[in-house]
Length: 511
Ligand SMILES: [Zn+2]
View 1 (cartoon, rainbow, N blue to C red):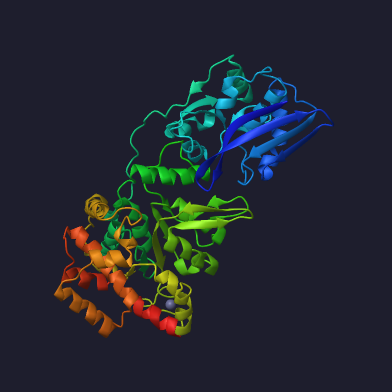
View 2: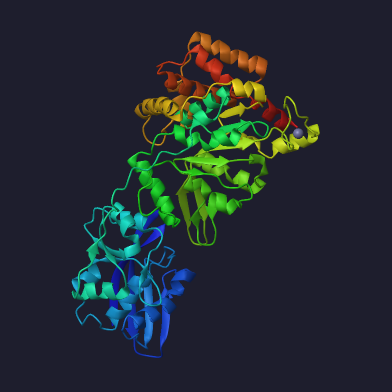
């Protein structure tokens, strides 16, 4: 007999409808899965056999063929267990000769434990979003109920294979998936920019970075507060919009990291260690998963000790920094994960860390310093709009410094500047950092006085044309923070100060 059920699979972070067909024919017992299954789908057999028997049913000792269609999409994951098991039961005649309507119309997702209970699976939210608005019903594991409720699709929660089978037969009803009770609003992060004394220049640069979504590099000796500042950076960013929230939550769902099934509202902050592999940073592997760059989508990726990351890892950042997504190639298909993150990188000025320190001596040779800096290649440096040098503060000076401005005050200015940009741009350009050449000409017209500043920067400081584009983008953000419609001379003068590594980079590129 033949049975046909509906289920879903993932392609990248999007769901696709899949039809699971099971055919049972007389003959020697065998079990074959066709339709581009991965290892986990092939292994489903052992779980399905045990789960069916432990649910009090017979597993037919015949020739069983499972077909997952369409065949061109690779089927990965363990969530096909439930539709396959139900398909076997249906093809064996468990639901009678005429299949109940519930069997053919519903989408089934779930991994089976050997005793027949259903286990939660990754990627439920993006899979369900594929059938949103179609009026279809889905049955999901009870462990995924909260996440399923977020999707807006009519979902029912089943605890076991038996529950799902009894529901199909009309012997029982399943409870709807409900959103988790709204708990107390997420506590504001305990970190605050006010805790970092001094470093006013770096704080201002971080404010500009947050407002225009500019990547930023902090350079300074150990103990100058680079990491402290970077870890407080997300407190300057407003919560995500609903669409951003959904995009980011989908990536976490695909990675099996969705937090208690809730939509993520706070922007992610990812801080991978410098020993991370390029695959883990960028995404990929034999069964592809989003990397740290995608988990930081719409949020912050903080790379401390930037030159200590492996060369392949640093170079692999080029694609997401240019295209805001990562393409993971596989044997038969490739998948793309969004990766629009704000990069905050921090590094020492030299291998020992004390170059330019007021009291400690640097033990590095000029060649060592040059080699160390060259680990961050020109094309990567070129994608970082703001370069900021932090200097060590003497204890006596530090003691005398007043407390810094609280994060909330800075965040309010950042929010206003972001709002201005939202009104200015539509589509993919969401912030000043993403402006194209056309946008630059349209939105960054310079008054007479400001052009003179740029000319001096080019002639005397040797800035390249590419650096000038960056200076224009930063000037635009500074003007937006001030609420100015046009870029003024002082905005450009300030922006020039955040390009201090340009000359060094051009020097090392020339060698
Ligand atoms: Zn040194």
